[in-house]
Image (cartoon, rainbow, N blue to C red; front, side, top):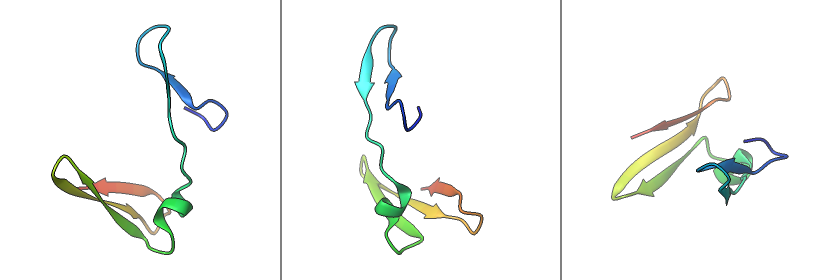
Length: 56
């Protein structure tokens, strides 16, 4: 997936629309955010090398 192409193939010939969200917009001024998924909480954080890591 690229910024220019926000579709990806599920099955041959089938396309699904995917949201593209800038990480700065998502994270705000914080270096991490918690995400609730299927009854579990995950933490998405920005490392000192500006990479994203998702942990449980």
